[in-house]
Each structure stands twice: as structure tokens, then as C-alpha cells.
Image (cartoon, rainbow, N blue to C red; front, side, top):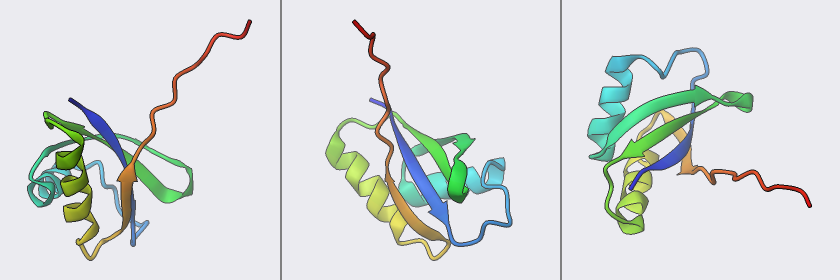
Length: 85
């Protein structure tokens, strides 16, 4: 199972896509995180890989939310395009 997270950091003046920082986030989350892209408003999207269920995803979000540099972390609802009839 993979999921995506939206993480907003307290400091907007750094690049959270740097490998060392992503590795540090992964250690905090106790899960493999991959930087995906920035969002408008200063938040960033990360992919969580190799998690087994939603309870584990909830734990990852809770661990990341305890970091002093994280303003918030939440699951990204991946939008699916629908065909118009």
C-alpha cells in the first residue's frame, strides 16, 4: 500500500526535497517517504511507501505531527478524473 501526505512546515525558507531531510523525516515516521512535489500555499506532498494498512498510516501522520518543524501533516486525497457523459 502507498499513500500520499501533505506536510506544511513552519519554516518556508528551506527545501524539504533534499535527500538528508527526507531521510530524517522517514526516520521520524518509521516509514519510507519520497518527496513528490510542492503545493501552493507552501505545503509539500510526500509519498509513504510500503505501509500495510490505514492504522499504520495514522501512526506515521501522528509521528510527523510531533516534530517541532511540522505545522501539520495530513493524508492527501488523491483525486480521480471522471469522464463526463
